[in-house]
Length: 274
Image (tube, rainbow, N blue to C red; front, side, top):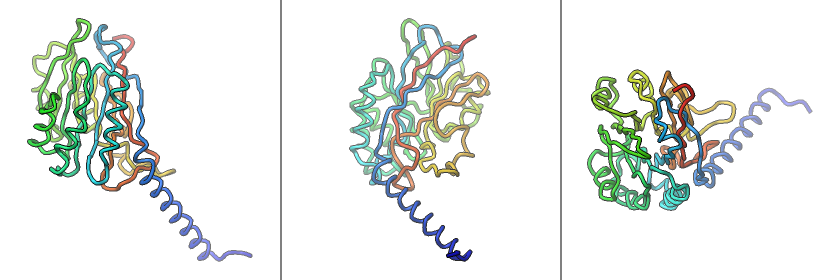
């Protein structure tokens, strides 16, 4: 029997709705909790020989909230510690919309994190500028709010600059870099700071914020793809390398589709010719 055009469109609509419902259910019940470790090698221009092989764990976008239970954060901490990184970077957005009910609890959940070279934290656009950094500092983490710190390993040094989400102008970043004696790594919640970092010849940027798109629709991709240099993984501009983590939690909608959460374990390598 031949279907009419209207009947065919209705049938396709029902199938599409069923598929979307199925994906949403899967993303809510399973994928948003399917936390794993992404291990990546990142080439860094001018990396001192003594820092070749430096291993950095990047844990970002935890978003502790009714949508992101304590168990997911505990899993992220356990996976991070199991990798035994040299250094841990916390990339911001510990809560959602600055919800103070979760500030102390998320800081406590993250408190077991440690590494030989320390744990360094920056703030995201969902974090307030007082309670969240104070809670992290009380747990022994170094919070970088438009600030710089120096790390030494095997007789070589690198400087980490951590910026607020709203610190965007190249002249403001330049002030933080002024007088640095060693290579600088930029910790910036928003990966769009790759533009300013490349202009200032910063060799490495570590970011989150994108959630990897969080919902990546087959055949269409992620809605946020056009806004960022890359939604997840590595990108290079001039002498600057960028790594963006998909993060741990969710925001806006309580599911992930084709975009599982992650803890990133980065091994830094000297770029050939530098």
